[in-house]
Length: 195
Figure (cartoon, rainbow, N blue to C red):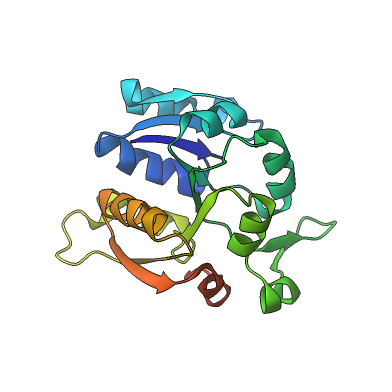
């Protein structure tokens, strides 16, 4: 499958390794910091190439939307309609930031919303699936679980059954056990990662 990764950060880089190992083709984008993913691109070789945020969105049949929450609207504006009809794998938690750059969970937002529902409203023609947000990024390193007889569970939530099946396979390809958490609204209960 062709997968675009919108923001190859802590989560995106780990999933890129796993998906490249499963023979998916990737376009990796980093929000304004391309040089930071040069070592990963070298490691992945012909299975991945560098692109802009828009190029990664255009490329992917499925697109990992794993951006810094305060940058969400700017990234949506950049991709425009490139995500229409595509499976959008959303991994964010609603982390706000103060003027002193202190991060906090936006509990007021989380009472009546989720990042996945917000993204679906902003991208009404995309097929949003919430997943990969409950384990801290280092725990998403597939190689760490390779010898384990049981793989960690990864929950996913969506209103689109077919998109859910695609993401279910991608969760398995990343080395984890997929668990259907229900409709997208269920993401409200699943927005605080383990540490």
